[in-house]
Image 1: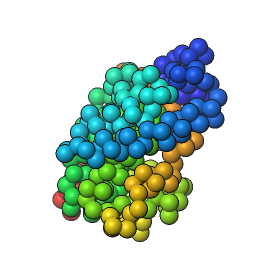
Image 2: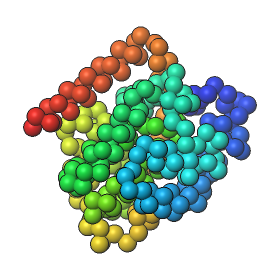
Image 3: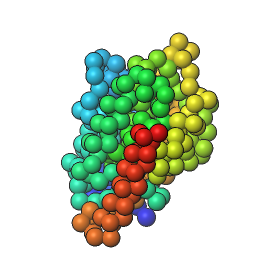
Length: 246
């Protein structure tokens, strides 16, 4: 089923892209080219900031994808606040909770000791926030790469396996206290001096091709979905609490 949160795929194409393209392969080519064009500028902006904020996450998305999406730089709270978005069994953060999840990731990610110890947990919160209707993977990879650089290390993404990484990320989203993504990333962590280029490392990251599309879970006002999301949140919060006690 086509991911169509705006409800106008037939007339405006996938997510109102500037070309009004409906073919997924065409859209992904547009996104990839836009990403490659914007990555250096996006990384330069991040590097120039003393402290990374939610506004920098929005700006990164805008820089990467404004050539494809007129709404680039707008989060789901701004343009799709009435729907839940999911992938597989995981419902991503409610539009009202996006910033809370991302702000938490930015806070922990800018604690250098925490970032060095738990890069997977930081990535998990960025991914759970899922700020945008598309382009999340590429955007949060850049944010994560800059946080890692500041903490003195990098991830050798070229050495990772797409399926294994996405499986570990899915486990991290469901149970953030288990350290699944931290454990997966540990063998691929390199000292900053060993990393040649942050941009090249990110380009080699798995799961950036958009092949696993999101789905509209339904309206945020639907009682059954609200209950499902609240149960998921309780599970995650319980996991966080047990992790902090440990």
